[in-house]
Image (cartoon, rainbow, N blue to C red):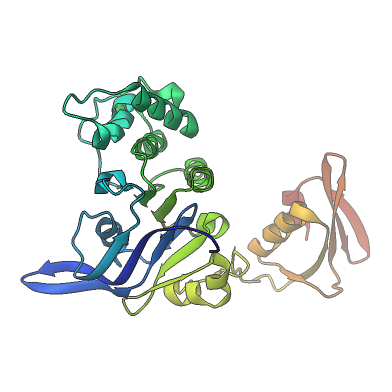
Amino acid sequence: MKNQVTYLSTDRLSIGYVQQQKERSLFENLDLELMAGQLVCFMGPNGIGKSSLIRTLAGLQKPLSGQLQIKHTNKDASRAQQISVVLTDKISSSAMTAYEVIAFGRYPYLDWSIRLSKKDEQIIANAIEMVHIEHLMNQKLYELSDGQLQMVMIARALVQDTPIILLDEPTAHLDLNNRVEVMKLLKRLSRTTSKAILVATHELDLALQLADWIWLTGKNKEILTGMPEELVLDGSFDAIFQFKGFDLKTGKIQHEAHKGIAVTLMGEDYEFRWTKNALERNGFLVSNQHEAISISVIREKDQVQWQLRQSGDEKVFNSLSQLINSI
């Protein structure tokens, strides 16, 4: 993107591991970039090597070949001052408080006395406020929900004050509200702090709505990159995931019109969309033609009603379930 700083780049990077003295490559000849202020979602099928790439970029695993370059905002900075990582590994010291875990993010900056300065304490306070978890500071890790723990780990990464943050499945095992909250938080942080944030995730719906850029695992040990919308429109997502009964271009499950009954639907906004969803889910075909059965969605003030015209009769219903049962 125009005028953006590249914080991390790779040059023909190949990653994998050595098994029984033989190399097993997962990805080959990768030329990738992470830009300042950009949220990148890294996606692909299970077991393809997403965690291995995250660990390689973080310096926790050696590449098989190729180069990894990090733009040093400070020439004396260590790797821990350049990249912070949120992995799926559980913290063994569950008796630590949330504050203690977050404060540990300042460790790469402390001297031999391991004492927090006023500057350190202010950075910690700012991160806690940014993630909105002030109320959790005195709680032990074992007292936190999975969603709360993820927020704590993200705050720790912020406290580490690195230009790059890498996260491996940060929304795994979270409920919908927490998944949305975590992904929206990462989007906001990339924008407000100008950090480069890479998230390995399976949250397809959220990635398509929030990511600035997508890394998508290809079929030939490659990674495809582009805007989310580009990779939808050119068929890349369909080719990689081979969706079964899911239409990515509309974002909907493909329903079978098993009732063999076509209806005309008229209405606006979200009431129209959810009425259409209810009809198709129940086996009706919603047609653009003038059918013998027609339904109008009517909103008057805060009241929604459904008007059904069928066989010369006209009825009005106050609920979708009543409407569906009467067709």
